[in-house]
Image (cartoon, rainbow, N blue to C red; front, side):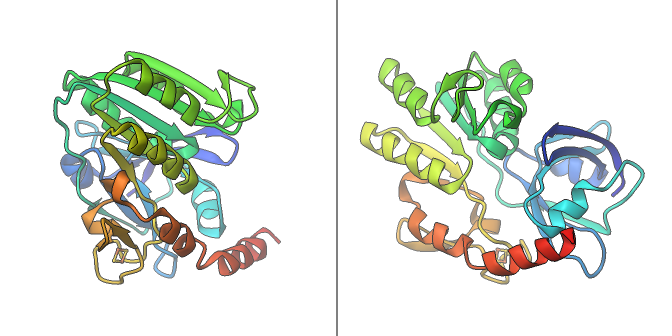
Length: 271
Ligand code: FES
């Protein structure tokens, strides 16, 4: 589980290519892994952002948001994870559906990329809307451009592309042409906002949920989400779900559960 390449995509966001041949052999779009730095480390779920079966590698993209992600982002090629568990989760179904709009907010570009790449290769018309707070936080722009027929970029502060939220071009595209499916991945408020629009316009929508996870194999219940009134586990039933059925208010509340402890650990690590 050695890191073979590393580059910095944006401030506090790195891309690691990790030698994991048995995971690369089975990886599908939608899968994720759980990594541990050492045998006492926190278990961190990370999307498989890309994989290369021939080289036996998987690509992980990590944003530093706390102690563990800061420690991972400080790792260099030649260093290894204690373990990388995966591939986990239910793969995203890749079918020819017609026109697909992929919407990514911030780090959401990492899980969106393998899905739209596979949908593009399956012959779908693919439109990607990529958004971030500001220009320097836009990631995978060229990679997404290469697997889409149209790429629309938006930044909250207008420093690149359209000025504003991704929901503005999303509504415009949905009102412009017939879209068969929307995939929205990013912060919970962004996915919630996208689903409000697609619900109004009656367009099938898939979201990828980043619930708090522990084991990643359906045993702890930490990643429980409510979808269509039923309890689901993000790690085994997802992480992709029907966005029009997700209880986003509950998800937002559960995501905040360990904020104080996470802040405390991060501050202690920094000092
Ligand atoms: Fe434990 Fe999903 S992470 S049940």
